[in-house]
Image 1 (cartoon, rainbow, N blue to C red):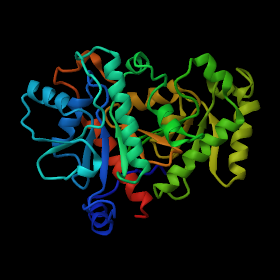
Image 2 (cartoon, one colour):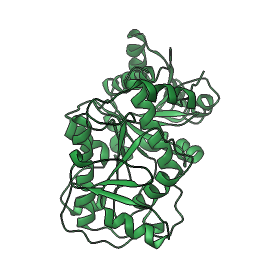
Image 3 (tube, rainbow, N blue to C red):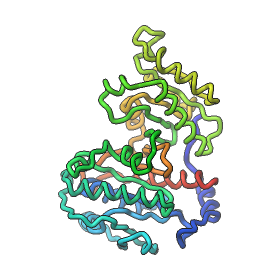
Image 4 (tube, rainbow, N blue to C red):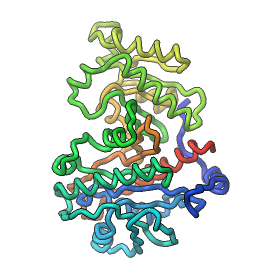
Amino acid sequence: MSRSFFFSSIELKIYIQSINYSNTDHMEPIIGITMGDPAGVGPEIIIKSLLSEERGKSINPLVIGETTVLKKIAGHLKIDVKFRSFDNFESVVFEDNAIHVLEPYKGPLYYTWGKSNETCGDHSFNYVVEGTRLCMQNKIAALVTSPICKESWHLAGHKYDGHTGLLAKLTQTESYRMMFATDKLNVILVTTHLPLQEACSILSTESIVKTIELGYKELCSLKIKEPKIAVCGLNPHASENGLFGHEEKDTIIPAIEQARQKGIDVTGPYPSDTVFLQAINGHYDLVVALYHDQGLIPVKLLFFDTAVNMTVGLPIIRTSVDHGTAFDIAGKGIVNFRNLNCAINQAFKLTLSRNGF
C-alpha cells in the first residue's frame, strides 16, 4: 500500500519540456538552497551535492549564502569549482559548470568551524528570510534549507525554535506541521520541539485532527490515491483499553473518528512499537506521531541519510535535510551529502505536483 514520492527520469524529462516559468529565462525551475550556519556542514554538503552525479540535473540551484565561505571550504577540501556571485536576484544568470550564489546579507561575519556565534546566527537567519521572500514572490520554485544552529540564532536575537517557526511567521501560516518523507516510511508530527511532558500535556483532539488533515492533503498533492493513514498511541500498547492511560480514549480516538467523518482513511491508535514496521511493510502511506522522538527515532534509525524534512501547510515548498550542523565534523571533509540530494530532489518533485504534473 505504501507508495513512493519519487518520480522516474522519464517523468522528469516530460515535465521539463512542458513547464515554463514566465518570470525567468530558463526552462528549469530555480530551487533556492540556503547555506545554513557558516560554521557547520551546510557549505560542504552544498558543494558536494551540486557537483555530484547522482543529483538530478533538471533544476537551476541557487545558493543563498556567502561565496567566501563556500570558497574557503572548497579550497580546504581541494575541490576545484567555479562560483558566480550576485547581489540581487534580478542579476542572476545561470551558466554551466558553476555554483551560483545569491548574497543578500552584508553584515559582519566571523566564524570558526564547529563553533556557534551571533554573526553566524544573523547570517543564516537572513538567508532563510531572503529565500522565503523569493518563494512568496514566485521568483524561485521551492526552498531547500541547510542546517542552522538554534543557539547562534538566539545569540543574534532571533528567538525561534528553528526553521519551521520562522517560516510560519514569514508566510503568516497558522496551521503547519513537520513531515518526514522516505521511499518506505512517511511520518508527520503533531508536536515538535517541546519538552516531553509539555508535548503530552498539550495534545488535543483538534491538533491531532488538523495533523491528519494536513498529512492527507500533502499525500493527495503528491498523487497518492486513497492514502491510508495510521495514528500512534501515546501510551505503551496504545493504553491497552485504558490499562496504561486515558489519552487514547479521551483524545486520540475522537480525533480519528472526526477525521474519518471527513472522508479520510485513518485508523488507530496503534502501539508505536509496531505501527512503523507495518508502514514500512506497505500497510500505511503515513504515520501520525504524537511527539518528536516517537516519530523521529524510527525515521533516523532506518533512513538517516535519505529522509527529507518537509514543512506542510505552508503556501511555499520547503524541504530540508534531516540532520543538524554536525559541528563535530565541520571542516573535516567527511560529511555525507546524500541527504541534501534527497531534499533537493524532493523539492523538485513537489514542484512537479503543484504545477499539475
